[in-house]
Length: 266
Length: 327
Image 1 (cartoon, rainbow over the protein chains, first blue to last red):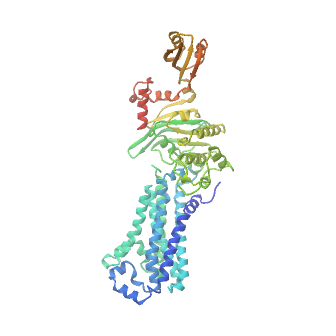
Image 2: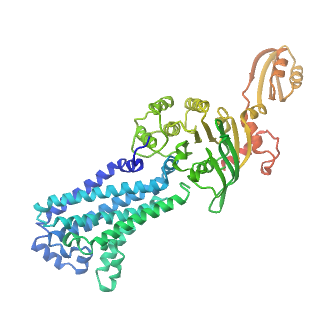
């Protein structure tokens, strides 16, 4: 009996609890942060407080535009709490997809069946992609719903672009985790690689913004590629989105190639 | 197709450590082939090579007429595989897990999964990670048997199963054989494969050191014999038994007019029965041949200088084999 995309279906449906939990977390964060904008971000007091902070700190946290609705959403949701949650979810899924499955001994049995290794990697990467897209779509929908009541004033096309970059950034960390896990056969290496892309991207962005001498760091930061021009306020840099998605696809290809060429479960 | 599996000069290195040093064997289609050997002998490595889970360093493999490296999914759909260590951690029921494996293996007849689970006494509606080791093993067996593959590759299939379920498993193997399926199974002890296998290969330190038919082993095997009789002296009884061809290690014990003798018997039984017919027997035990002993002889057979003299059957020798097996 052949069902279409059996490995995708298993990877996707068997983790529905985890998907649901991350969705609840993201929804909670969105519903908590954004309605506070009128009383915090938009108030003059807040602006005074931000002005009182050391400018290095404001830049590191991307709080320089927090007094506007789009700036506030960019800094708090897409740039910080949402980014954090999405990265952890995506890296966890990516590391488990191949490396974790191999380490737990289950990949061996799957590969003994009527599947190819490339198919295993690609279908599981698809499951990662779909879960990330679902979460990003959820955030998009919630922000749209809150836009009016929280007086955010975000233009829908900018929000859409930001969501695409938000998903792309998470996908890149997840794909890095999947790739390192697939190359090494170890979940831990996958987690480390995914976390490194996420954390270093964030740190390079924070440090790179401090002085023109360090600006080269920004070019190495996927976080900066995605959010450097504040997409919620100014619209997406589609080339950056292309890079994020393209590199992710490349990492999946590397993973498929590596797994096809090596021994499994040794 | 005469051979379901054949390997030629199969070697496998992990880094600099060579695990298989030129394994040659072939499994006739429609037969049950047992591979036995101590842990670490290379049984699992050999089986993984057949499934293309790992790739041999050199040598040639044919499984159902194809190179596993090139056979791809089509070839693996014709095989049922039970890994030596089965990990099933998902938060899914056995039924859902099997449905998944069904989707990526050969066609499964309707009702087949339930029939197999019933036979083995497996509850398919429990979550897999809550199953005991034996029940996980049952799930693994169902997964291997359910699509009635042409070839079954089973790594230590009876490990974790209680004796009754082991019997059921042996029945399943015999039925599969009758249907023309080929079964290749491994174990670290012979007693597990001797009930079902036609042929046994002994693998040790990455080499096949003997391939024997089980019936051949049985013929050459040693049985233990014990009986008590009245109305005969210990001396006469000893002499009578000693004259039977194939009898050795005779020990005689006399008490209260009853003599008790124990001995070993190699070869035909008929001469022994004739000799015993003249006695007033009170008790007679003729044990199943102990193939394990024959095999242990082989472990220490010619070409293996490390384990002492070839024909020794004493217990210290057995111990030395077990020590090696434990390594």
